[in-house]
Image 1 (cartoon, rainbow, N blue to C red):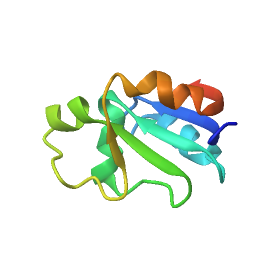
Image 2: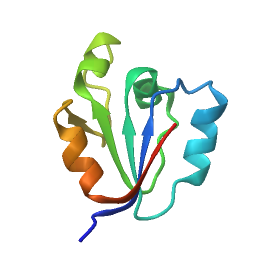
Image 3: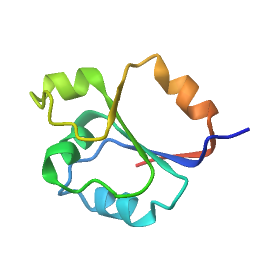
Image 4: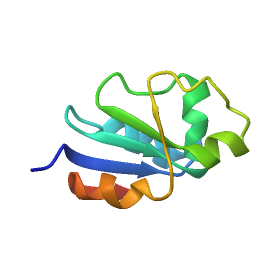
Amino acid sequence: MSSFNTLHILNKSPQHPRAAQCLALLSEGDALWLTENGVLLLVAGSLPAMGKVFALSPDVSARGIGNTIGDATLVEFGDMVALSLQAQRVISW
């Protein structure tokens, strides 16, 4: 059984048009995984109020975000397969 309807994988910065598109399409029951510059959403105050949010730990560290991750869960590269298997579908932004 799936835990998420859709797992959205976002690697774009908060200013990128695809970041806005991704956030606009998030629905109840979806999850958002932030990678690369997508982790900057953690400090931009743009996180959605619904769904689960995951952030790739090495990218958070590389950008000096530290402990300002809010309700997001830090994950490692190896977690990608497990998270993907929990979703009915996966969309990469």
